Image 1 (cartoon, rainbow, N blue to C red):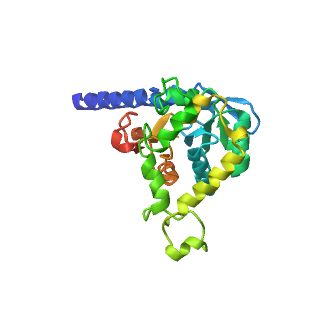
Image 2 (image 1 turned 90 degrees about the horizontal axis):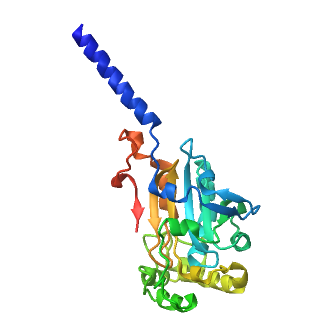
Length: 286
């Protein structure tokens, strides 16, 4: 009889603990920082709360990309990659949400030039998301120096870690990366199945021409945002399952890694640890 009562008490205790877990509300610091920030849709211009851009309550996954300004190389290369792979995210019911620095008009021009669906793109003109998440504001953010002047040393890697390596990679190629241009193309003489020398540099040259031709319609109103960096987070509901923080110009998130996280990873509390995200469970790129 005592054994029965002990067992019953334990079962009740377990169930009570299970109930506490079910009703406990635990969100990530990143979600808390941006959930109430308002952004504007490139499609209709309406104001939206970030926390309403995906179905948080059901635990839906969402890939949230925090672009730099809409006329930046980083935003353009990310937009081109996302356009190529958006169907793979759609297949997994994972919305891609691109939040960039600038106005709704900037966002619309960006969407038009890169053939990115306007419904995916949002403008954060004050940069509230980037500020809330603590993303880098570039070289000497407090210095009273024109942002255009700050860009030059940043392109040389000063106050922009990783940029020089990325620029050089555009010329030297990368055997670990996928080719950029679909075969057949002129780079096939150097081989296939990897990113060939000058392949990425050629893409960037084309992007630079398009950006310069449309600069007045892409540049942010706030000149200081020219040096701001972004990042990317894959959420599951309110929890973070992947995070990347740009360290400098061109050091953006790997879209394939974002897709992998969206496709296969789950919250740490799905394995029974009560919702605490362990470092090993959350891939975080520098």
